[in-house]
Amino acid sequence: MIDSKTGDRVIVHVHEKYGPYIRISNYDDAGALEDVFDDHYYVLYWKASAKEFEMDGGSEYYFGGAADPIKLQAILDEIIFE
Image (cartoon, rainbow, N blue to C red; front, side, top):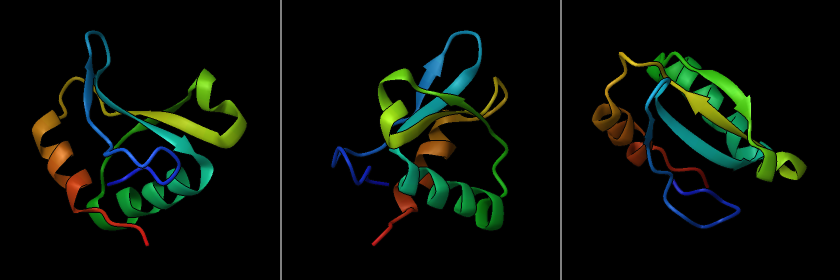
């Protein structure tokens, strides 16, 4: 997945307490990603505000310590928004 605002590939990071997470910089990408996660991949996540993306409605998505960051990255790499 490419973040439409930044033009950068969305990369899975690992938080030492909360496990894998990603950052999406804008509302449109975040909403579209939630639809794909919910309706196609059935990925469980929780969402938090990202201070620097607040103006554009971006968010951070956390997947929990049991989630596999390599599989999450593979899923994200398959997602293409026009």
